[in-house]
Image: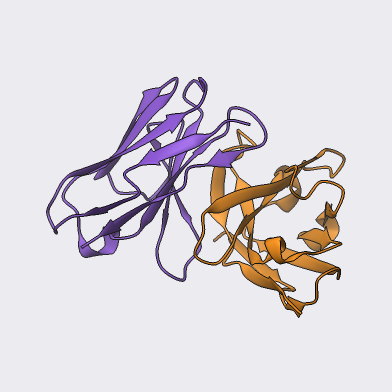
Length: 120
Length: 106
């Protein structure tokens, strides 16, 4: 069974930094690209970032480019999102998403999400 | 960026009804269109990809159609577990973008 478990969400002050983690199980992690998607409370979905299976290819939404860094550790079956210079607009549930085996852009499995709240 | 517009933003329906949700892309995306279902307090669930292909385990009461800029999600015979928010998403170009959602209420 595919499982994606996010962690690291906390209440943090504006300007702060935070690293989210996602531990994957039930599939061969290094066969897949991985995404982060976020959702502000009561709002819609926003794609954040993609990392290729080797970790060398990364893509970001303009809203986070230069502030967030996606990475992965295939030995630990883990995906990360380093978030710097956080602002209230970054308050959201952050979901780890595994795409299909065939297309990196077809979302298949979602984690349960972890909540980041940026507030003073 | 490609803008995705869903309509309606909400709809009221009854158990047993057939409903259709529309999604329009601001430019042609071929069939690179997905649909997701989200229930309160839960993560989204993937329903459909490539405009009309059901993900594994998704019941056949869900169906999708369309290509280019106009797409639809149809749910035949609504059941209580189908009341949720539905989102479309284009994956033709980065950044991947979602529609604003359609809330299906009793």
